[in-house]
Length: 283
Image (cartoon, rainbow, N blue to C red; front, side, top):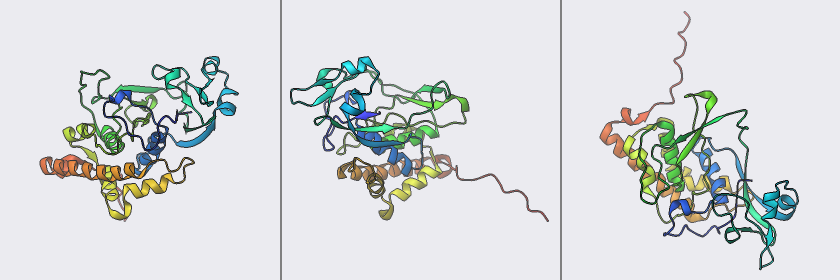
């Protein structure tokens, strides 16, 4: 199980919340998987929305005694539980069903760490989880892809990222933990784009994809709503979040055209689409 329903689709993150106090949204995890696929990154493990019976499918089958002990019946006669974690695991922040049905997202498990070790990197542009400190640093094209991905969904919570250790530098960033995306449709968090505005580098494939998603007939909002309609919890996102993504695509393209004007196309756009040279023709 990945994450559960705490907020309605229409609720926005309150303006007084620090981003790290924000709830994790199950529908954001689902939408992030579809967005990642449409951007052709394919770095989010598959996620699907499901309606779960908390009594039959969790409480009655769990072997985890600690989890089992956190189940209770609320004053409204709903089944609730709060589990064990560092944040939000208390009766005040319990997850409650109606009466025991709850929405959640399910993610495909990554291979066990014993089989495929993962390396955790500190994001050089991470925000500090301190109210006054700002984090700093520098890194490359995978991070630029991740920056675009995070900006489109408004995810400020990218302080670490993971790669598979086995492949050394010949690997990719796994886009995990996207539950704090899609919190505000009425606000575009431009600070998420700082790595892109500072580095002015992007893959050609990503640049072309964004240009395509800005066209009327391939608008990101249309492709996302078509893709998400097949999920069990459809509608996964309200229309305002879909429209916000179209607006943000244009903003990313504006940043890139400023970069090209300043630095030149060949500096900004890394051609990742050229295959190996063809073998010489036989005479």
